[in-house]
Structures are given as C-alpha cells and as structure tokens.
Length: 193
Image 1 (cartoon, rainbow, N blue to C red):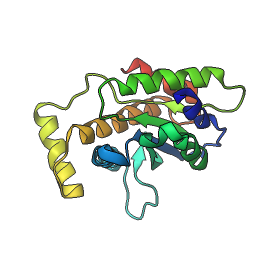
Image 2: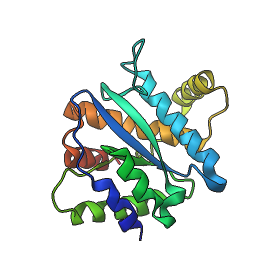
Image 3: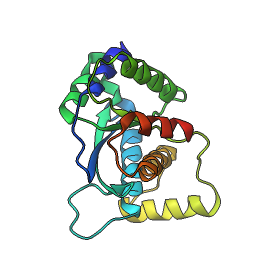
Image 4: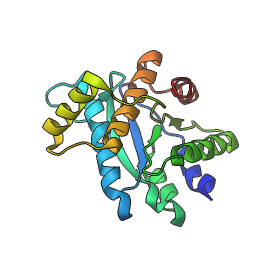
C-alpha cells in the first residue's frame, strides 16, 4: 500500500534551471506532528545557510538553487493522502525524516520500487539524510545555536535529521550542478549514505 501511496511521487515535472521543489516526508499531523515541524525547521535552516540573499522568494538555497520546501505528511499515508499531497505538489526531490527508527529505510525501499515500476516521465529524486551523520562537537553546538536563533526554541534529534537531509540534498545538487537528472541525484544521495 505504501508503494501505491508513493506512486504519486512519479509525476513528470519540469525543473526550472534555478529552482526545485523538495518534499519532506515526515509526520505533520497526529501525535508526532511536533517532530515533523522540528524536521522541517532543520531543513529550512540548512537551506538558509549558503547562497542566501536579501529579497529571496524561495525558502532558501540548496545546491546553489532556489529551494521550495514542502511538508509531505507521512501520517496521511494510510488513507492515500500521501499520494494526493505529492500529486498536488509536483515534487522534484523527496527526503524523509521519521520519528520511528527504521521507517526511512521502509519508505526508501517503497519509493525505489515505485520508481522502477514507473513507465516514462521524469522520476522524483529520493535523497534521505545520511546515515551516521549525527552532529557532534563544535558542529552540534553551532547547529543548536543557529537553530535557536532562527526559530526561538531548542532543536531535537528530528531537527538535526532535517538539517542533515538538507545537507545531503545540497551536496548532491552541487555535485551535479542542477536538479534535472533525478536518477543521478538519487544515486548520489544513496552513495552518501
């Protein structure tokens, strides 16, 4: 059922040369909604750290491109809501931050199966947070201070994982120069895991 729900992510969407739409699959409703918001705020922080400029209309920049960050409520997956959300968003890239250990691997496997089953059209790139990329030492202190300054509250592990997801997307896009080759983006993100 999850593969069917994620099948909506396979919409063909033109990628503007200077921007892309990044969906964050996380719980944005139900008992884990606060973790989803933390993950989104962590992702927003990553998008604001490099290449930002005054008067920008995007949510920030990842890989040097305007990034539009969209919450994809994974709590709605059971009712088919995930597919409807993804269809409406016309996503270019999806990342996932789950409050339950192991859920990201399940979502990744389901998305890969859905990508393989797609007939034609441009797939959506999948770029999860890097495994083992926990923030430590001075980097963790700097992240926490930047997060508090930007959002006014203490970050949790979900915020750090959202931030790391943004860093993974940033690194993959910078390596390719744009977000148009979605299979290559997915491979780069998988190699970084």
